[in-house]
Length: 176
Length: 341
Ligand code: SF4
Ligand code: SF4
Image 1: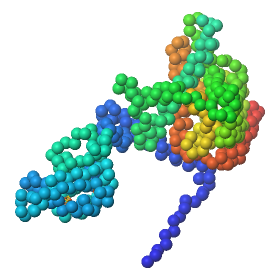
Image 2: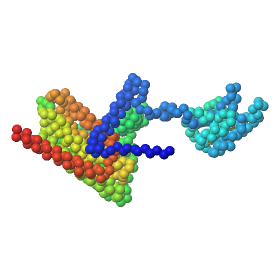
Image 3: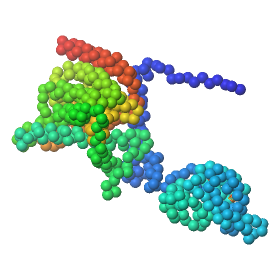
Image 4: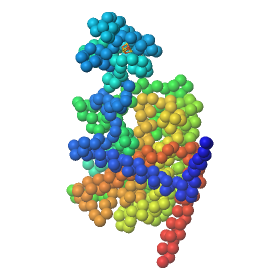
């Protein structure tokens, strides 16, 4: 079914043509914004209110605020016993369009699991943050929810994150 | 001391104008930021003191002063250098004629707080404001660039059009005051009523024409910061800074004129200033009124979008000028009929 909606444009009445009343209306809006925000600023500066006057986040000074579903740096997940969930199936390495995941597999001591990753490197300097690796993983071993966006480093080598760093066992030092 | 007093007053007036103009550059950023739910410039700091972004003005000045002063090939060197000086100079001169205060008796003699006392003060201010257009035209012509020239032509057309409106919108008021002396105009308002109550239409027209005369948004077509190339496109460093300062100083002048002619100047309702305290209060009253006017001008600047050029000339010649003349004629009749009563 196609339905037609007629959008009524605001008519050019005498009042709008004179323009002056419209200016006054506009001024009232901007003045209201000014004084409401200004009083918030003042109350905040005086410590009387917790609510800041503007929604601006002063990013390098204050940590970035990310949405709940933000797609950020990768994270490798662990099982309940603390071993990495990854079974080195290579699905993520295969699907990765940027070819930035490099996995070396080895035998797992647990025969039920068969394989595990010996090393698992992601070169974030190449990653395009498409999220395919997360989609591809059959065992839910990789997520992109580390909520870390400050990833820059001084060298390309430092952009490569190794398995302990992705697991959160070791802090990534080089890029800070 | 007596001989140096007028010079001192003029110097103080110019210093006042330049400082307020500098403050305006800060106010423009911060006011627009607060109005638009932002924070505004707040990074520059001296020893950790940010002073709500005031330090940015210092940083900007240092930047402008140390930038390369580039004169393009094909520019007329002398005129190119003279244009910003003429623009800023004439704008500053206007300030000398504004009555910052009345006459007070201190230490056995009377001191006038108006830098240059002249029976034709208003004409002087209007003439100096009008001469500012020379700086604009000169800048466009001397840069040797067609874009600059076109910007200057826009500026010239706009400023000359609104010069007419500016004077015409004041005509009725001057008829009522019966003087061109700004000090007398203030005294008249002290005795009777503020100009804005006597001539509300004249006030609106004057503010409109004044904003256009200072080339600020919504009438900022001559320069059109980011979108259309303006007359100082070939200027850099402090010369560009001087053009920017000119706009702010002219805003101060227009706000000063509005204060003087429509808001009762330095007068304080129901109070007769005496002595040193009176002098301070007069200056404070003038400054407060000036700042309120500047605040409103700034708010208008951040509320309205820019006019198209034909709309601008339309507004000037077909609306503001006829209204101003009608206002004048009605005022003359009213004054005449009143004198017959
Ligand atoms: S997000 Fe995309 S580009 Fe980055 S590692 Fe995963 S699959 Fe590769
Ligand atoms: S898809 Fe999952 S299980 Fe397979 S190698 Fe990648 S992270 Fe490991």
